[in-house]
Length: 277
Image (cartoon, rainbow, N blue to C red; front, side, top):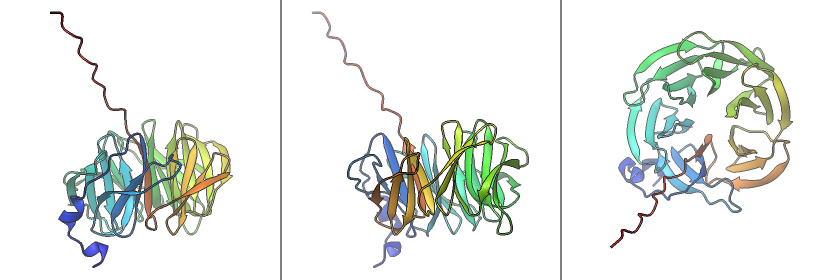
């Protein structure tokens, strides 16, 4: 029996191991999401959640939820700590490429260039706007929504718009031929193309700060000062900020989307002072 033919209910009820601190989440063609500690000497990937409806196209998260979108336009929402499912809705978009989840809502980017803000509980589109080209990746920083785009007839560029509303305008470009990822690192943006070129861009001015080669990639995440790039076949290379290789992680499947989440420290309860007799 194939993984996809297993019962959705059974898969969603699988126990999820608890990892603390920083976690790397990866998703593949069967809808599974696995997790690992990206900083451990030996990383072991463990089951976390499953959309179980089709190949995963995009992952994003906020402080409470993990959002998983598949290539059939379905959105799974789970608890970001435990993986427990909360909802599964149809977005009505069949070319989803990316997502971003700032406090103001869930944004979904598409290959047609449409960027929609959706209600993750119902799947209803609340508003939308259109980028100048196909959207490959979304990011939010300092009250702005950024879209990394791909146009086969020209160089890929990054556009920005106010989070609340407004049209996209040109922000930055570094001769990207095949933009794949756009990530936030502090007050900077990290743009990566399929050749493995990772470019650091000032998140306010759009100025290019530096660029490093890693390895040909289709997905990328940032863990502390390390770049994690999926180079194919489940192999995830780890590189420092200078592009120096620092070892590999091995996912149980070929990765279509990946994400690093940082769990806030759990509150501690101070011991009660002893009462005087």
